[in-house]
Image 1: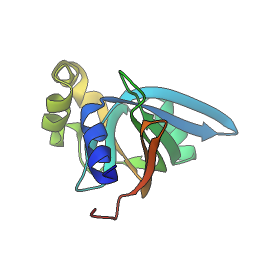
Image 2 (image 1 turned 180 degrees about the horizontal axis):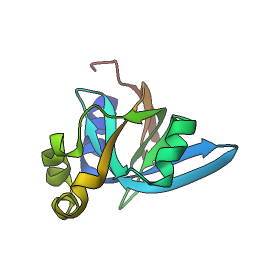
Image 3 (image 1 turned 90 degrees about the horizontal axis):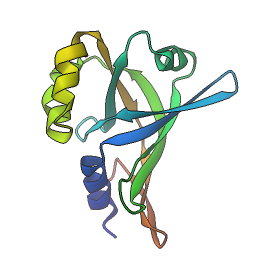
Length: 142
């Protein structure tokens, strides 16, 4: 398996991920739409400023995620750090809309209320099936 190629492919075609947080020994998980910024090596997603997950990020910025396959078992999972992005959702809107065309409606209706977050991570587990599971190191160029 070409792990980098499969990582990039899955991050490009999968549109949702399950994002896990934990504060005060209480885990929580939710589904978010995402875009992977290859240059920044970060998963980007937006949320409303008053959302509970924002409060959770402030208390513990360590998160885990797994992409959600819509067929088969192909997915990417990783652990990383979340932080508010220095960019806005409008700075990356074209990427979200290209990946998720209906996201245009979300931006038109609520874009001004959305905050962009980034999850940075060094390694990810790429799973194609039960026999093809490998770790991808984002710093590697291969």
